[in-house]
Image 1 (spheres, helix red, strand yellow):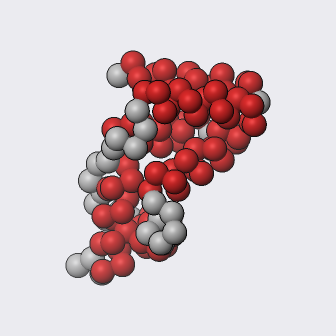
Image 2 (cartoon, rainbow, N blue to C red):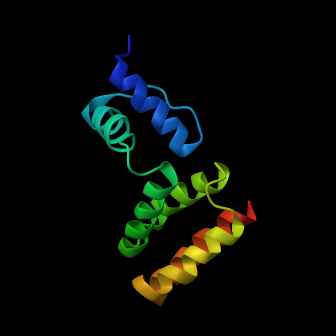
Length: 115
């Protein structure tokens, strides 16, 4: 039986990523569901799109293109960002995170838009 906090976390994970999450094994999954999603992603003050945009900027600056593909793909599928919005992120971050970062990000965006 899943407790209420874990269930809230799984529901928020499903909302954020756009696919259904089931309970998973281990402490890392537990902290992810219970703390990161049930508590942090669910706090008042910022909506899911605003939190995702903050995360995308941080991931782009770190060069984490694998996770960017997951986050931007989910934002596009969930209707948080349309084609124009995804491409605008690339142009905007090019000026703050650098051209090489934006070039990698652009590859991710165009891959998402091609699917």
